[in-house]
Image 1 (cartoon, rainbow, N blue to C red):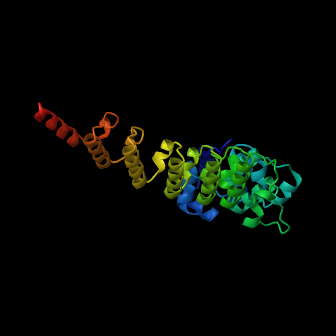
Image 2 (cartoon, rainbow, N blue to C red):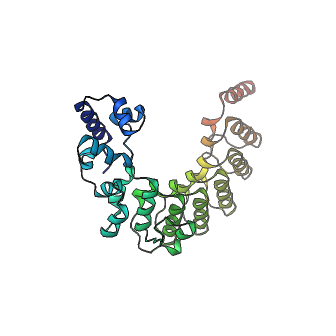
Image 3 (cartoon, rainbow, N blue to C red):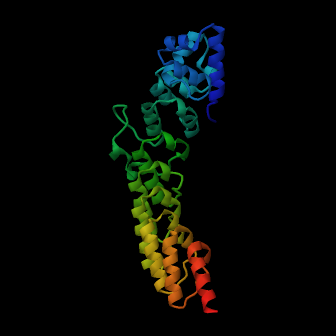
Length: 296
């Protein structure tokens, strides 16, 4: 369940008005900008977790009342007792995801470390080496809901581990590093597995490399066309044309000039252009009609 920012904003606005205070006065009391209070009350943002105890004490309400429901993790984090809470209470991904929008990055580091089974003697988040897939427990909880709040290095470790065990990684790709996504995509390609769902999160060069490898191996690459570079698309289209193969599936991704050139090349060699006719320029179509009319 996500926080209802509108409810929180209305609550702060009501409590402020009951105190007969302006937004500027509340901003001064909380040591924040007037714009911050305005955004709170309009439901466009939420108070930083460090401000919850101050707001609670100032208005004489509980943190739960400010948030509209009881969220122990947020309450304990706001009081600086996060480590104590996690040591005494089994933590779940669902609870962490519910609290995540209000928690600070370093607090989320501790939480995700705990959920991923990463222990640190000094109580601080580990370095990138701690997140290597082989150091993660095999049976991790589904961390998908926490991905927007995790460090890229941790997401990389998770996505590599999921790939290792043949689990879907599509939902993880937007939060992983480009290098990791491309590495996994290459591994999947070597196994003949589909990678098109990863293409939006890869560099154009990497997608081009995969497409070229597929074509050389006689495998289809059309689904990668929206993510390929224009020069490679043109090159492959011309190669297919030279082989006498159709390019209708590529036509929507080619520029008009390239299609016009291919159409003329086909016509000179007596080939049909019916498959690409809807994509060539009106100017070329007019020229073809004029030429046909002169021959009659």
